[in-house]
Length: 321
Image (cartoon, rainbow, N blue to C red; front, side):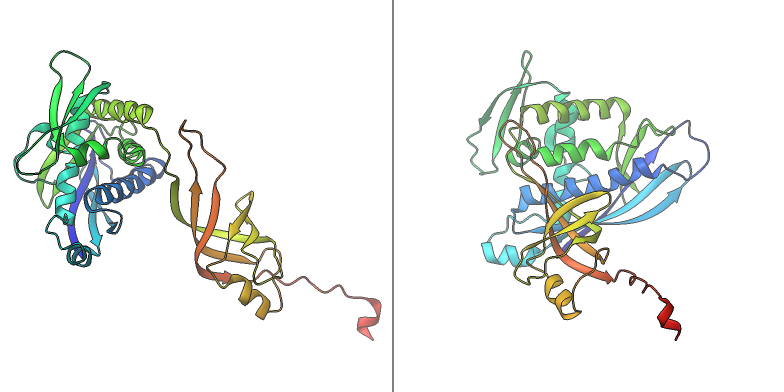
């Protein structure tokens, strides 16, 4: 396992002296850093390597500072399995993205740096370079005279990844609200970069054009904690799906990898409004035209079961005798 810490601070020169931030802005940004770094790890280390982002909030004068830790799982195992030294550590992944400092590189040597440089301009061509050191560089040429840059293929592929692009946009959602106008990236006490509003506009413009150019065919898969209430149970242990209430929505959820049905039958059945706290996988298929299907749901894990309140027994005149 490989781990590395970094910090992100949302700053505002005109902010009042408080340490608050709107949860509606902060929550999507926190989730976005997790999604972006998971996609980056998959690009640099392959699908077999896992990554998660841990967060501890901190408060500083006139800013809202978040301390993160990126944890790359199965690091040594995948490295040994593939018999390669090319596995990227957590720090390496953060360097590629441009969140922590690495060896000196051109401004386009990181994912965020490349998005800033691109400024939302369309790509005319991408050409692999024949490099003797096998580093996998490509030449990206965008609209305009002489607008070409050499970047690593991993950075280019990440900039074509719709999930990474959407996460990148969301990471900057707090800017423009409550006086926040800058994102500061830090490693320990060292400021690595300050991304101002103009830079954010360039990054977001590049994300938007990248999403337009991408032919997204991989399904969107989200795993989220949720409460499901039984809507119509099925009294067959082999039934793969039950109908649940998810908020106000009625859904079918795959329960085939859980013991929900077995345990319900052992209790003598399930009642409407029996509730399950679960880890829920939501999958949305996307076709070549970017059109999304209705989501499908699968329960990955049951965390807690809460039985519905028993139906009160109606008393009669004869009950008192």
